[in-house]
Amino acid sequence: MTRTTAAVMASGRDAYREIPLYSGAHGPALPIDLSDNTNQWGVPPAAARALASLSPATMARYPAAYAPALSEAIAASAGVAADMVVTGCGSDQVLDCAFRALADPGSRVAHLAPTFVMVPSAAHANSLQPVAIPWRAGGSPDTPELAVDEEALLAVDAKIIYLCSPNNPTGTFIPPAVIERIAAGASGVVILDEAYAEFGGWSAVSILRRAPRLIVMRTFSKAFGLAGLRIGYALAQPAIVREIAKARGPYALSAFAEPAAVAALGEDMDWVREKVGLAIEARERLAAALREIGGYRVYPSAANFVMAVPDVRRLPDVMAIAANLRSAGIAVRTFSDLPGIGGALRITVAPWPLMSRLIDALPRPDRP
Ligand SMILES: *Cc1c(COP(=O)(O)O)cnc(C)c1O
Image 1 (cartoon, rainbow, N blue to C red):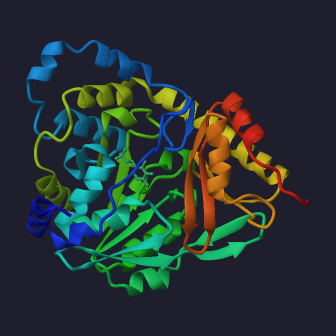
Image 2: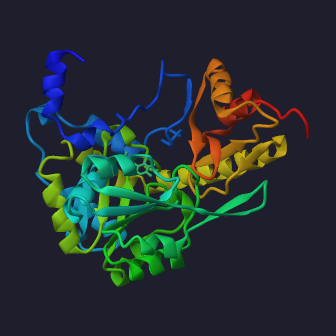
Image 3: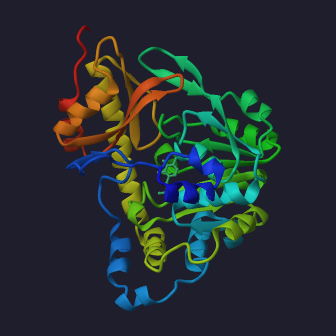
C-alpha cells in the first residue's frame, strides 16, 4: 500500500474493508449467457416502443422525484394503495435502503443460507450483522429438498428477517403458510424478495393486508426483461414505505426507466405471461434432461433457473465444468462451495435450442 492509499484508507469505514466488491461476469461476454437469470426471450415490445418514442430532450431534465406514475401503475396492478409502493434503482437499491432505514447499526439481519449473495454485503454496508440460518435438507439423493427452519430463524430475534422465494440460487419455493407464520411471529420486519415470483405462481402481495410487518420486493429485471433499466420496488404498509423512501432519496429512477416500466405494466402483460410460460416449460425440461444424464443433483425450482450439483466422484468439479462450457461459448453461474450443498451450477433457462447446446456441452458421469 502506498502512503497515499494508506492515508485514504485510514479515513474509510472499517466495516467496508471486509465487504467484497461484487464481481459479475468474468472475462469476455459469451454468445450464450445463462449466468444472470435475465429474460432470454427478448424485450417487452410496448416498453421498447415507449423508450424509442422519448425525446432526446428527456435526458436534460430531472425525472419526477419519486416516480409517481410508476407507483400508481404498480399499485393498480397489485391491488394496493399507491402509498404502499416505493420504487428504486433495481430492487438491490430498495433492499439496501430498507436495511438502512429499518434497523439501527449493529442490529441483526437473519437470512437463510444459501440465499441471494447481495444480502450479507448489503447488511455489512449498513453496519448490520447478518446471521445465516441453514436450510433444512431432505428429499432423495436425486431430488433433494430444502425446508425453512422457522424456529431457528425466529430465535435470532432479528430486526429484519430476509427471505427469498423462489430462492436464489436454489430455486426453492417457500410455502405461503411458512411465510405467514414467520411474518406473524417476527419481532421486526420480514422482507420477502420475490424477484422470481412470476415463475412460482404465487405472490405474498395477496397476504399483505393481514401481515403488517411484511415487505414484498419485486423487480422488472427478470420476468419483465428490463434488467438494463434498473427498476425494482417494495410493497408494504405506508409507514414502512415512507421510511424506505427517506433512505432512497429523490430521482432514483431515471427518466427513461419510469415510462418504459409503466408501458410494460399497461400493455406487455400478455408478453410477460407468454414468456413466463415458456420459461417454466424449459425449466422442467432442463431439470428432466439433467436427471436423465445422471450424476447431477437437481434441486426443484420455481424460478427461471435450475441449480445442479455435480457428484464430484463421477464428474469434474464445477469450475472445470464451467471452463468447458465457456469454451463452448456458454456462461453459467458457479458457486464453489454453497453451505450444506457444495459446488453448484446455476443455469438460467432459455429457448430450447440454447438449452440443447448447453446439455450437449455438459460432461457425462463416468459410471452409471
Ligand atoms: C436478480 C435478483 C434481484 C433483482 O435485482 P435488481 O436490482 O432489481 O435487478 C433481486 N433479488 C434477487 C434474489 C435476485 O436474484
